[in-house]
Length: 392
Length: 139
Ligand SMILES: [Zn+2]
Image 1: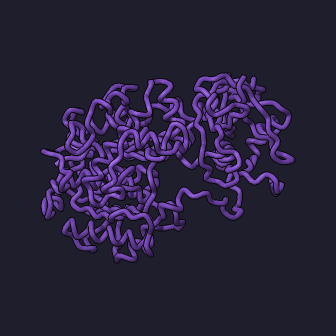
Image 2: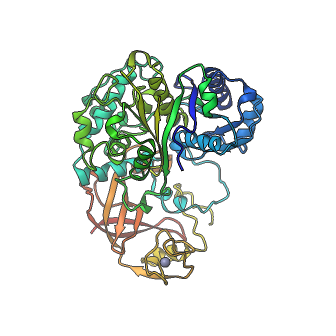
Image 3: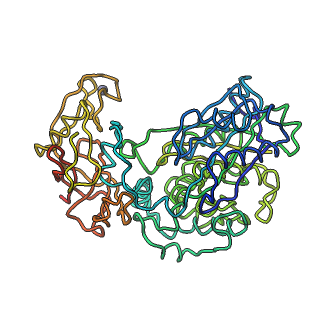
């Protein structure tokens, strides 16, 4: 069983991230990027027969596919919410391909996006009004101790990684710096035109040791959508189709205290499977486009996906140029750290950037001869993982 | 759960029928852990079945309350304003001698003195008339 060349991405739509919603709603953003993706794929709404949506973080409702489908007059034969945190977007890609391969549908619209405010997201907030008690284990055994959202979880991972492998703050900072260089070649990035140095990162305030402010993603407003289609539709698309060549998923729960190790992620399971399905080796990869909520996420992803040996991620990022012009182009749109994290559309940005690069429309930051991309989505605290190999 | 006294404004655990012996243990200044009667493995957090063999029969065993810091961080900005008075504070995962890991604060330790793998022992903190939190301090 393989998903290799079972479907292709033929259209993308992405809103430029902004610091505040400026009157936009999440649903409004979804329809904006959905429209763009459908038109980019050269399709019309009656041709969309599959609809995957990632749940908004800041808004609660049931039946999101129905809400969006109604607004766009799309009435799919296959609809789902994909709830894998930051891995939702990558999870959508292979779910769309599997549905297409099974004959359920032929053109799947995958939508992510969020209207949220960069200034208020991390502002201290009072606990919400008293709700019926839900006896979820993390509420009983973690929340009473004052975690700083998921920030403290990634900090625990980084601290342990430093202890086990000698990883340094300068090595982690290098990731943020190279990604910022990429963002400075992307006019759509939230931090376009604001170059930083390793010293800037290390001089930024410690928020949750050992992570500094400039190593932590900034939530913002934005959205992204893609259209995944069957091979026959791909052949008729206006742009060169970007094929799904490999995909795999692995997960391990939600609480860090429950994992055998926090310094190795399930990427070690799903990345090799995705590469094997695609029949490619690490050296064949032209672009690495991987989830980056924090610098440590990227470092561990590189290790666990096998681009370097376990524990050697620190020296590895120091020795390689991760910019679009470098020897190991990584997160060429700037990554979420510098492009922005518009809710679960942050995880979609790694997919849309891979599509742009593979289609040769990445502008100033175009990677030369880009034919093969490794994409990874990460959800929770390095718990949900989806690895993809995309190619021309 | 009764209403929290006004002086304690942080989130208060809500024991379930399954977890109540754990919380009762803390009130009695003991760390009690569930252990599977079939495969004999310790289980934490408390569950109504063993996640290793699905056995539904577990016993409560007194643990030593000793362990080591598996990892820690210093929280310097509180997301919940009730924790603002504590920053910077230590938020950690502690590996107990029995092998299970628990999330907790490290107390009576300056942030700069914390270390991964540091030995720690249980510290009991009454926060309401019924609830005692398990924290740890350097051993
Ligand atoms: Zn058992």
